[in-house]
Length: 235
Ligand SMILES: Nc1ncnc2c1ncn2[C@@H]1O[C@H](COP(=O)(O)OP(=O)(O)OP(=O)(O)O)[C@@H](O)[C@H]1O
Image 1: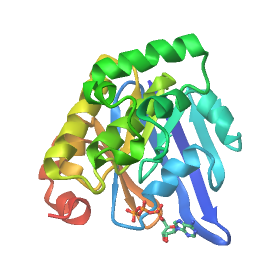
Image 2: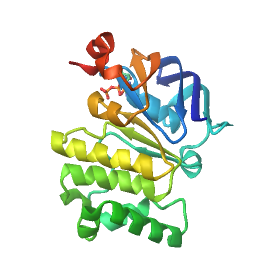
Image 3: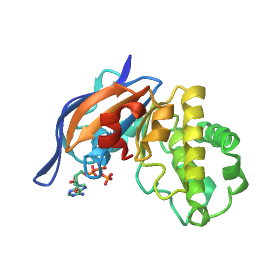
Image 4: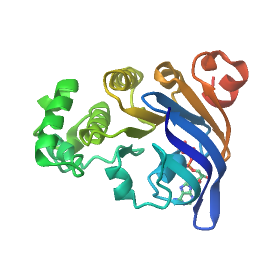
């Protein structure tokens, strides 16, 4: 079953159309990876799902048409977005950041969720009273992910979680995402340059080129496909 289906999606910034009628599906409970060169439109795909850019076409979440809905309503329907650059609040503490993530639910549910994600990311618990701006890049990424999960989303959108992180930390982030996918019912759609790591936890990949989806393929074996490797994986 697909949690998200995207049909004939066009997106524009002002007069410039950057997505030219794309189709893809995000199967429920799985990790789907979006791959493509710089400027291909990957970030715009995530922003379109949250209706943060002007779109036309049809985006369905669990069968319900969310095209044209307000961004906060889409969040309340269970879509959480971790943008490129993470979007944590540097002058708020770790705990305050996590509580912001609970804005769609009650205080009691937020309390339980914050404790749950502290158990999952013990380093965040250790730093609960520190300002987020003082955390390392890896910790800030974990915080951004945990904050998104506090609301208990059905769909987690992640934009380049490895950006600016050392390889060892990137591995840690992807290990955490793999566990989140296995241990919760969260469906994940992730844009990632570090395709190798993303494909290890992904079940399918959406290949994007110049605002068009070229193909959606099973992740298994993709890293060994010569033409895909050269065009999308950069090695
Ligand atoms: N706010 C904006 N205003 C105008 N054009 C934009 C804006 N944001 C992105 N674009 C353009 O839209 C196209 C797609 O950009 P997008 O950021 O979605 O690509 P991307 O695949 O995520 O690239 P990257 O890997 O560099 O983040 C690019 O040509 C970009 O220059």
